[in-house]
Length: 96
Image (cartoon, rainbow, N blue to C red; front, side):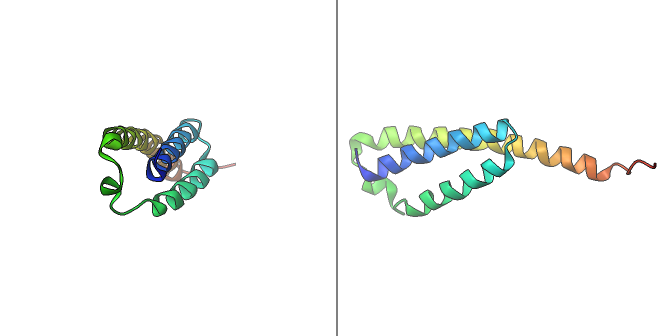
């Protein structure tokens, strides 16, 4: 397996872990995983498609598509949390 494909597999594993952390509302874990995944992303070749042999490009494409779906799932959880916090910030403080 090529180094770039291995990196994509790792990227997918981070994306899965991030989606799980978001679903479980483990925000600190989500941030840490996002930072680690970002470092991995920075190490991917700019011309990733050109560096992969033709016989693995379809597999790489499916990995990337799966990552995109997981990112959408993660963003949905984050957006729901952001809205919940926004509602809390708009509510008046209880008077004691």
